[in-house]
Length: 606
Figure (cartoon, rainbow, N blue to C red):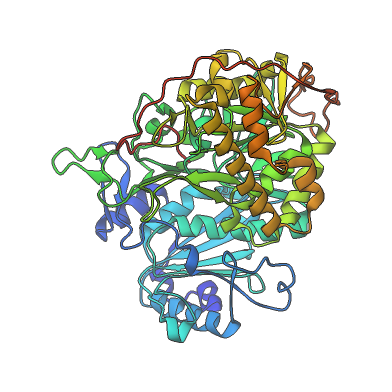
């Protein structure tokens, strides 16, 4: 007899052939027996994902139906696909799963049960089911007993290959979201990150529209002593995972969160971290989380010892591990906390222009959120010979179905209402651009982040950078003052000035192109490049002054909440009174610059 629940979806499999909600040991055993992977010496399951070792953004589609047409931000990120092509792909996946003995995992997405959604994943391979089980919020026995009908269904079949002509796709791979039927299709790829991010994309539509919850591509942690939580935005390679996994703070989550009226909550029940270059010394929390129950993708094992070689990138540099959040010793197992007191926007500036830390006004925070800047460097992609800017709105545009202004307006409103302190932290290059300067020291970055989180950086005097429209501290606890002024770390200050003008112009050009309807945000929060800027810079340099700076008076940090259960309220933070007279700014001894060489490993990782 066919399994009735799966038959309703279109998967016709005998009841005894369906694997429902298997435990972790059972899923590992099934994967090994099917020769999907092998065990590493640390107990983790290691699999190869096939041809696709990362996400396939050009193969991601949203079904264009009348009920969502006017809400979706159509374009290169959200590509439309017709309902007919969707039905053909779904039929092919269901036929593929009907020929197998599929694995079914019922989970929740959203640690805050008030805003959680039920997702049922039907997967062709056991390791995909293990991934889904460890990454979703795992329902307790009572929740599983009363689970009922799922809110979304995910059909994952790496063995089904699409026909671009018949299915309206770009390749054999397709990731399709249907918000009307509440079904997600993942075809032609064994890379489990597609399951994770397609579920995230679904929540990024549902929660803002239905629950007025802001969804964010960010990590979050909390100080267990002060109950002060923080949110970290950042693209790949900026250090979002590394910097939020702080042994002195408790991890709420490493990648996907919601911000409701009550506070921040993790959407996931697990973590998905890069492992390339991983060491016990540099990232002990992630290193220690790789054990039985974890799933490693494309990590190479020693043939004799079965020890993972985290430096081996022969398959891909995008080697990954997924594990449940409780594998992190200092994780917040409830996955929830109150309204954040601090927001940190992480960027890896390969131009060497941005300072290690800058304070943002609410308008500037909204601008940086919409801009989502980081940079690619030479060698990361074919044809790149100098740093290239990367602008990904909301620091996660590939996963956001709605228009960026929807998320930005929700964030701006929350920042203003709760008086959240916001900072831009550059984990990229200092002393010059990539190839001349060097990467920010991880220890210094950690000290900067700590000062931002505990508010001690606010004890400094700030200099307002008129070009980029943010405030830069002159001192920061635990950090040499020399590195705080990016210009002074360059051997040639005039070369810095030209690079700064160039980067600021890139910011302006991107924002004007993407958000022409938001000139007020650009004016209040974005860079200001006046006409004849370069000649003014050169004149200021000859006079021995740093152009576009003005001193800002010191303002003490806002008081903290002392009760973790006091949510949604925060004392008012006094506004800054800016002094517009140019401050004398000497050129201190340039920091040491060295060639980047062929060093491949990044000191910070997503």
